[in-house]
Each structure stands twice: as structure tokens, then as C-alpha cells.
Image 1: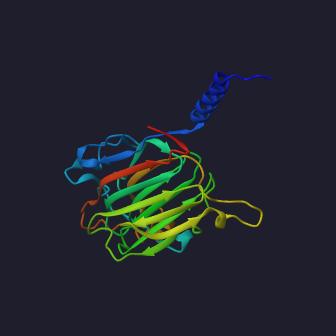
Image 2 (image 1 turned 60 degrees about the vertical axis):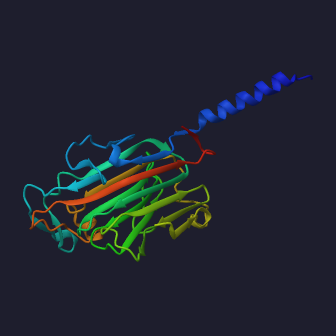
Image 3 (image 1 turned 30 degrees about the vertical axis):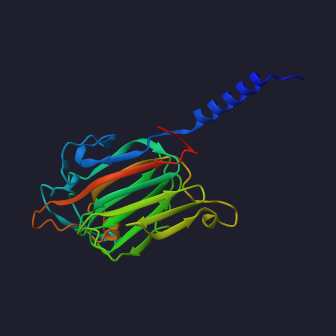
Length: 262
């Protein structure tokens, strides 16, 4: 059967268009927060707890109206706060990313119980994150989850640093491919997760594979005893001082093999 070159070109063009149509739509670029939010929005449309300054996006935990320390008798009398800060904020980038790299240039909060989080979060539950705990500013915690039923205390790793996460700006980068996740702090590789090493004998894997939103936030861990124990809290609000983290910029680089890059 004779097939013209025009027909072959048409088939190739259709295949390319169809393939592109199935790819995730992703915008690469750098947001300098001193110039505004750009393509970012606050998750709950909060107008309190953040502001744009010449330093960047400043997220602030304000004290609750009342500081009431409690203990959980069913959980080993672990302490928690009856009231959490009303201004935990979380900012989300406008498009999802299916593999690529993200760099966060930020200064974390330095108060025990406060958590500064730089996250990739898929709608179905996959997650890759940096979490800077205010109580341990000489360390950073990296973690990942897969699916809608995350297993905690399995994939998290605390990495010792030679810098203080709260005393200055530092760069936190995630490089995510189908084969591996690399975590960098100030361009130094601190952890590598290899996809094939994350599978059990049955071939079940918990490696994140779904397109994810890029997020950055500051939150108060104090309202739940188990969570705030992990974060070395709860926050002591006796002094009534606010707690802040500042994001100078975020750079998103979408992998063009798996994304329609805008």
C-alpha cells in the first residue's frame, strides 16, 4: 500500500500533538517575592500572616488569643497547646510539575514548634519535602510519601548542616526524575533516593510519580501532641512575640520530557 510523505507527516504531527496533549502543563521560571506573589496564591486566601517586603515573602505566626498549655493523658501526657497560631500560611504555585527541579531560597523560622516547609505535593497524596524545624536549626529533614495513605516515620531523614537555617538565607533544591530524588542544601548534595531501591520483594514501590504542586509554608505544630513532639514543640508563647520565615525566591524548572513547558 502506498503512503505519501504528506500522510506520514500528518501521522507524525498527530502523534506529536496527541503526546503533547497528555503531558502535564507546567510553567518554568523564577519568582522573586520582593516583586510580588507572581503565580502564587495562599491556600486559604488568607490576608493575615504574610506580607511582601524588600526581603521577599515574609510569613508570620502570630500568637493565639490565649496561650493555654495542655497535656494528652492518652498519649503519655505529651504537651500541646489548646490554641494554635491563627496565621499558619501555605502558598501554592499555579501549575503542577511532573518531574524537574525546584529551588527555594529562604530563611527558616527559629522557634521550637514552628515548621518551615518547602514541598512538592500531588493531588493524590505523593509528597517530597524539606522541613526545617525551628528547634533544630543545625539540621534539615527530608521526606517523601506515595499515594493517599502515607506511611510516617519511614522515609524521613535528618541531615546535619554546617549552617544555621534560621540565621540567614539558604538554598534548598529538589531534583526529581523518574529514577531518583536528589536533595541539595546550598548546592551540596545531602541525600539521594533511588526509585528501584524503594520497592519491596513484591515490586510494590512508594516512590512519588504523580504531577505535584510546588508549595511553601510556615505552620504551628502545637495543636496536636504527637505532631508537636515531632517538631520539638509546642511553641512557648509566653513572650507574645511573632515568629517569621522569609522566602526570597523560588525557581521551578519543569522537565520538558514529562511536561508541556510554558
